[in-house]
Each structure stands twice: as C-alpha cells, then as structure tokens.
Length: 132
Ligand code: ZN
Image 1 (tube, rainbow, N blue to C red):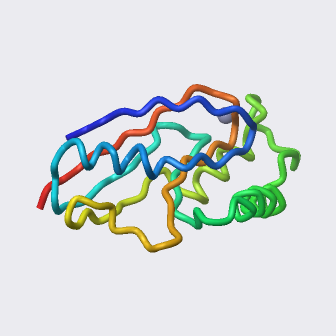
Image 2: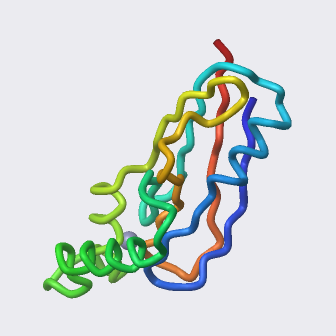
C-alpha cells in the first residue's frame, strides 16, 4: 500500500511532525505487522526521527544544522540552494519504522519529521507499508 501526502512548508528550514498522519494511514489499512517506509522525493528536504516532546529540540536541531552547513560558503551551484542539498543528504531522504500490533513501533519520545531545507514549498512524502 502506497500513500502520497502533500505538505506545505512555511519556512526556509522547518521540521514538521508527520507521525500522526502516518499512524492514521497504518490504522486505515488494518495492517497489524510489517514495515513502514517513509521517503521524500526531493533533493532539498529530508526525513528524520527525533524527539517530539520538547519543541525546543526542533529549534536547536535547525540551529545546529545551520551552523554545520552555512547558507553561504562560496558555493557554485547557480540555483543558490547548495546548503539545502547538503542538508538533505546529511539527514537522508527516508526512514523505516516497524509496525507492531497496528502501531508504529517508535520510542516514547520519538516522532517522524519531514525536514524542509529550502522552503517555503509544496512537498510530497511517500509512505509504503509492507505487511509481514
Ligand atoms: Zn539546487
């Protein structure tokens, strides 16, 4: 089963919690056990799993990643968004989560995030469930 989610981002760098959307899809399909793959078809965005309790963690992650990968570094790519391409490859374009008893088997403090690096934009997230 494949589902495509549309996401509208509002900032250059932004983490959007998509855990509930994905859990709702798992629940709709009635899959009890399997694997959920989440993938972004973009070169300037990513998917990551991290803390969903304190929103300050998201702010600090953006602060940290912007320090590691500065927006300006004399890049030559004429589109002017090389920082976003580097961040996308560092964070990665996909994650996998085990489905157990109809639930995403995440840790207590974990959430699944769409990571925008070159917003605001209209984005897509592909979610594929494999039963087993
Ligand atoms: Zn580019």
